[in-house]
Length: 89
Ligand code: SF4
Ligand code: SF4
Image (tube, rainbow, N blue to C red):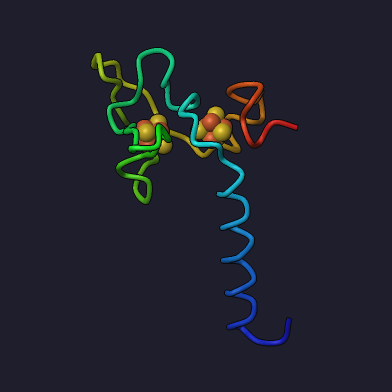
């Protein structure tokens, strides 16, 4: 890696690979319980966040409960959200 551009490209590729590990099951956003109000599902049944680029911080569930959205790595410190999570070991 010799140039700043190559470094940026490398980091973008690594980030895309990491993001692609997500199965989009929605479990970590409450799909199976009282989901985050920002959690949506597409025509293929895959979940997505409608404010992904600005997701961290105070959020509300569909029923109105307040919680804090945090990076998935902060969740993984304790345990994967589900056995099928793409980030589970
Ligand atoms: S704001 Fe956070 S908890 Fe809500 S859908 Fe987006 S990523 Fe999931
Ligand atoms: S539980 Fe894991 S695989 Fe499912 S949406 Fe969350 S991060 Fe992605």
